[in-house]
Structure formats: C-alpha cells, structure tokens
Length: 322
Image (cartoon, rainbow, N blue to C red):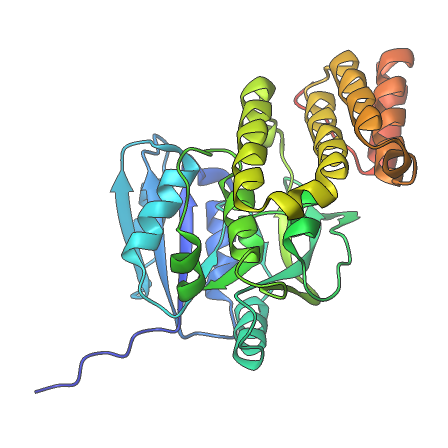
C-alpha cells in the first residue's frame, strides 16, 4: 500500500470576493514563495465577477477552492480554517502581496521560538498599481502584548500573520459576531495565551495595497463593533483593558477619523479627532499621526481641491473616488 501524502506544514487561507482586479498578482506572490511546503485553501465567498475562473485557471495542485454563498470575510476565513489541517495557518487577503521570503521567514521564526503562538512582520504600503507610496507599518520590535494590540493594532491586518493551529484552537477560533474586526478580536485572544504569545519579525515581508474600494462606507456599524469588542475584552481581561483603555479609545477614534477623511467627510473626521483627544489628551498630543490627520482634514475643508489633492499626494494620503 502506498504511503499517504505528507501533510503540508502551512495552510494558506485566501478569502476571495469579487477580487478579479488584484487576485492574479496576489496569487503570483504566493506562487513565488521560496518555502513550498504549503497548501492553499481559497474560499470564494459568492463572487459575481471572474474570481472563480481565475482561481480555477491556476492549475496548482496545492490549491483547493471552496465556493459558498456570500457570508462576508469573517465567515469565509472560518470556512477556510475548518478545511485546513496544517501545523501553521497563514492568511492572505485577495489584494495584498507577500515578499518571496514571507513564509520561509515565518516558519523559521516559529520553529525557533516555540513559545510564540503568532508571528507578524513589518510591511510597506502599495497603491492600486503595485507601486510603493512611501508609507510603511510601525517598526515594532519584540513581543506585542494584549495591552499593546488593544491600544494600537501594530499587526495591521490578516495578510500579516502566521499562527499555530493549536493557538487558534485554544483561543476559540473566529468570532463571526465581528464581521469587520474579526482579525483584531482573534489576535487579542491569542495574545491572552501568554505575555510573549505574539511577536514581530523585524523585516518588511508583506505589501498592503490601498485602493478606493477599501473605504469603509458604514462607519456607525464599525464603531458599534468596536464598542462590543471592548465590552468583550473587559470581561476576558479586565485588568489589562483598564491599563490602556483610554489610549485605545483615542487611537481607534483616529482610525475612524481617517476612514471618515477617506470618504471626504472632513467635518465628521474632526469630531472623531476631538473625541480621541478627550479620551487621552497627553497621548493624543504626542502622536504625530493625529496631527497629520488633523492637517489633512483642515486642508480638505479650507483649500481648493487641486491644492488639497497635491498635498495629499505629497503626504502619501488618499481619499475615496473623486
């Protein structure tokens, strides 16, 4: 009897919904990985464009495609996780890119640091055409505690993480009640598995793509999710939350203000920045990101559109479609 094929060490989950514009480039960056002991589980979440055909045309024996009706990103990720069996789980969004050494670096790091349950890297920001725009992630070093992640989500997004399957199980998996910030919720629960459970790899291994379709158009629902997440974390880790809650609320209001800015809702963005200042005045004043967002909103309100757009490009900022 022939031996059963060896189980790959990494399961890569790619959640797809109407991703035809960038999906090919994303899958190319996955195929270019120097580390090859992985499987790919692509969950087509009810796409109505050519995404399904693009996946089918790849011809990669490591790729499995699962089709489901549209249930949003959190549910698509949960489906992919249920179908995966590898020791390590990596996530790749349909519009982001990986450096060719991404999986190799994460696997080596996790193999060499058995206490770490989830690793993440630094990343750079690219535009719709794949060109770097001069922005990058925070240069976080070492472990990222629960408090740090609640205060400021330095991980940045799902394309930037590789986690142990055992950690995912211990943390309870994806919470579908958070369809927009499920990644933050999951990372926070994994962080509670140990003070050093999450750690940064100090290299740029991911390229986060910014494009107009990402603009959040229902900010009230996103804020409602944040408030529910904060309540959940207060119950799970009341002491840890109390240490950073005011700064966390200040930072999340800046994030909301940026989303409002990208939707050209400058007045709403200024109100959110005001709320961020009221939550933690000293921390607000000391964070240059607040001043950048404030300046962008004021110039959007006060300056002619061509001048404002030129300043946006110089600062690496963007809005929704003009």
